[in-house]
Image (cartoon, rainbow, N blue to C red; front, side, top):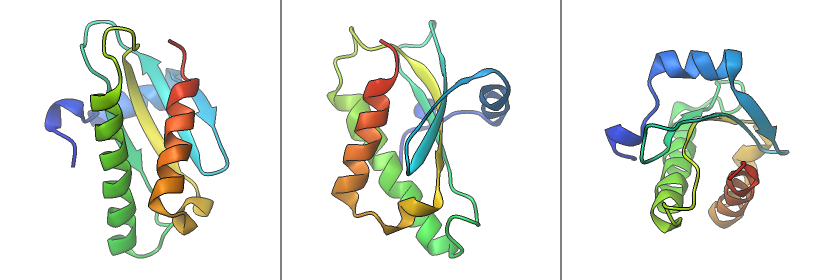
Amino acid sequence: MIPQRLRLARQRIEYLFRKGRKTTSDFLTIRYSPVKQENHSRYCVIISKATEKSAVKRNHLRRQIYEILRTYEQNENSENKSKFEMAIICKKKLRNLDYNYLKAKINDLLNKLPR
C-alpha cells in the first residue's frame, strides 16, 4: 500500500471526474489535475466490479498498481517532475496482464503526462 500522504481524498476524486484532464490506453484511463502546492503526487485506483467480479482479485490488482505507483514516485527525479492528483481507472482488459507488462503500461501512461 501507499502511505496516507500519497492517497487521494474522495472529494478530490469527484473534482477530477468533473474538471480533470484525461489520458487513456487499452487497459487504463488516468484522470489527472496538476498540483502546485504539494511536493508529491496523490493517487487513487478505481477498479469496478464489472472489471473483476472477485473482490480478492480486485484488491490484488489494486495492490499491484499501488506498488507500481510507489516505486515510480521513488524512482523519478522529484525536482524535474510535475506533481499531479490522479485517479487511475482500470478497464476489463487489464485483468489478464502479468505484473511486468502492467508496470510498463502504467509507466508509459505516466510518462505521457505533461511535464
